[in-house]
Image (cartoon, rainbow, N blue to C red; front, side, top):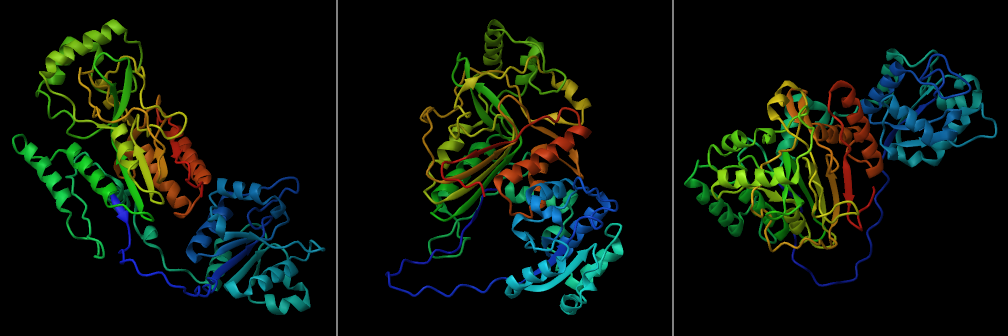
Length: 515
């Protein structure tokens, strides 16, 4: 469901001069000083940085269990960015703000003095510290008195026993909730509850909205009236609420209650589709597809349509994406669909409609949008995000073949109906957004998002990679590094699953930060 993170709003008070509060004391931190050669490898090469998997895995586990900041002491620290990139390739991914290097001494062999100099500079911020080094740092009598008990001489690569000794010296931190939740069961459920605005089989539950000055939880009367309308429209059918009306109502509630300084999260995980913007138009618009998208059509609409147009099956597949549909064939399909629909239409949510709601958010209101669906590019945000586009030719799509594959595409090739599904009052030329927007979409317009069974549940490749990349960056990571994490995860999936070939798209408003 849409979720809003907002504190209670107090009534405005008269302005008065107040002396600024004193700066907070610096946070205390644990520090782990690490050499590279003979610590993260057993046989170093003086010509290049060389790492080994087992010592790197032990180091990453040690950093996570202790919460220690990493300070590099090796002479390779002159190439810090390159060294961190190689460490990341071996799974050592501390947050960038948790990484530092020691200063350079005139005598490069005196790493003991460099470590002590770093500690003197940061002495008010360090609670515990430990050193893993390939040199005997205790051989110099003067510095040895302070280093004694904090240094472990490592040779031949970091071992489990050495890592345990460092952990005992630093102390293990209390596990965060993310460490105690299994990804294949509870985490997937919790994240989908928090992020998913639509669920294929989950009943839509409206969020609650508070009155000014009160804790959140008071019910919004106007929102309830919209939900009652949605419910009433479905009482004559199958007793189910309309997902489309419910989502539109939720979007209206979300933007109407937003204020400057709020942080909003909006996510969709499911199917997308393209459909002609108006009857007979060669241009298409993009839509999100609710689970009840066909409830306003005759029960046997798709069977009737497929019987007349067997080459244009209304399912998606990886094997049937071939061939070209001519304009004459497209017109014939549209006429067959019109007759079969008997005046009905799809329940679709236009991406233009989503953009229209986001455009109502005020300045200094931050919104993060996550879209794991095909065609889910937010119109008008960036250069390559048109409101209308020429139909993406998927060729002849045969859904029946799809079920033989583990990975499946998240788009529907719906029979074209002579109906305009986007509200006519919405402008096709989108304006600049006043709010601060970060929008993450699962694939480019002409690609398609894949879903597959992984870690105990069927989920989108993008959703899976998005959550994994967030965890890899310790839930605090810049946009560029986050993109790299996602790209690497999807590239790894491609080696194990066929037809996973999608490039995530990041869209930013004009004032959005890359951090």
